[in-house]
Image 1 (tube, helix red, strand yellow):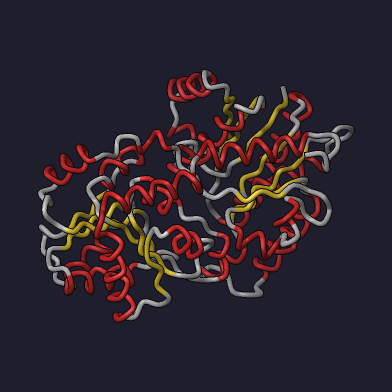
Image 2: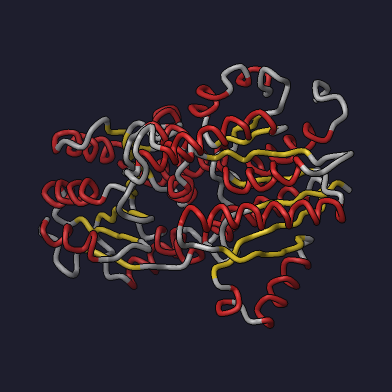
Length: 421
């Protein structure tokens, strides 16, 4: 059995790890790979009791996943990250010598740097380095306004990125747009110009989480929320940064004007006041909206009560590599989407599958036209819901899409003749 170490610069308790990382590791195990995961925990002595750690390790071990962690250091930002990189590299180097990993699977740039440094000091047989790039990390910091374009940090990280691209043995991207930028030659061959395997694996969802979504639950939740006869438009996710708060408020304002019975369902981990104030400024009363935080497990339950959903993200260069998990969740719940152009493969997916409406800008007229387009799609709600669910299964199913592609990539990394698969 081959062995893989998955390195993730997040806490095991992060929702992203629970809903994305661990499900992928379970899928990878189905290909006959023995999986370990290394996470970074903030102040573990305070946040993890010995009992909690052992319980979590036992739970994951029962699924065939070995879990270890190091401490995450936050401040000062750059020195703390550098310190974590070298702590992670030493851990990986020491354990790679002992456990003889076949693959070091690095989720984004910082873990990839840890793995590459560790590999540099391993002699003899080295594990393959899988760079799970996912996003355009340096450009994300520039687009978010955190780093200046061409600044020292940006140039340093871009230099490290180029090195990582040279020393890695395989790559994962989230979108075809990102593939076309980084590895256009791999579209037909599945390999870059050096013969290294490249896979596009979008943010997938496990459909077992959404099996509860049906007409009976919809009626129950709408009754519970006192919205039985209303048009419910949902939004899931954060606000601020790349996630367009003012534009979301503007959309709900136009919706309120054109659909007086509209109800806004906002499921967010951000400060509720960021969106609540905007909704009230747009004429929404306390009985016209819900702004709340729910656990990932409860998201499908709430979305079952919605009629459609929105996904507004800042259209910038780095977002060409983005695959919004919320879109996969919306579709898995049978919800049509109003989304803006310029985000990964979203436009092509929605327009090809007929699962929603894409807007090119956030002008009031464009938002009004989008609402008209949504009306047309939803004339037969049950039929449209089936179209959305089918699109979700074909494009974002955790097992059929995500698991299959990860297992294929692992097989290509481990085969002696890279051109044979």
